[in-house]
Image (cartoon, rainbow, N blue to C red; front, side, top):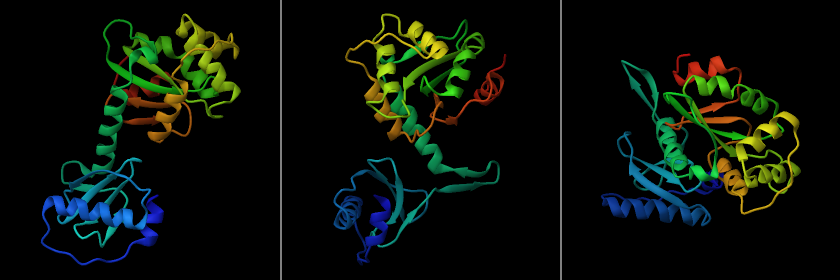
Length: 241
């Protein structure tokens, strides 16, 4: 979407606009180039004279008030104390955290922390994925260390695949956690059907930029791709054994 926008941008000269006029102007110019691009929000950015335009797709562009010049990419703040601070990443993490917080726990397969809960992670998983199985074997250690794991489905082969059907069966099981344990160990699961959330979670994952498994998100929306060991994950989470 954004590439099509950039290829078609033309210059329009306008000045002294109100906040509402600036927002309308930017939206009009974008949709003049491509009516399929939908704008979610427009706010004044920390960059003087530039506005942060977030698309419904989650992509972010920066525009002047005239929608004459636009920049793709991430915005950084140079802080003497912290160095380069990625403001775009921080905003995206807040968006991800807010989105995941809306997912009903009844639609997730939850492995609760044992004892004091020190961290919560949302994990998009695939039962056929080697590193997902490796992570699953580490769940007891993570739970003992105070980590709650919330599984959501991301069948890499896509909706309609055999893996997707198996994952639907897991979510339809009387005890989804037990069914997940068996599937991760044996690769087999009894076929069941119900109004399961697998397709919805697959689509949510794509919206959040998930393209591999396991993809882990912290409560603050930070993304951790892949899994090496329980120790390295606990370190990234700031959780002590």
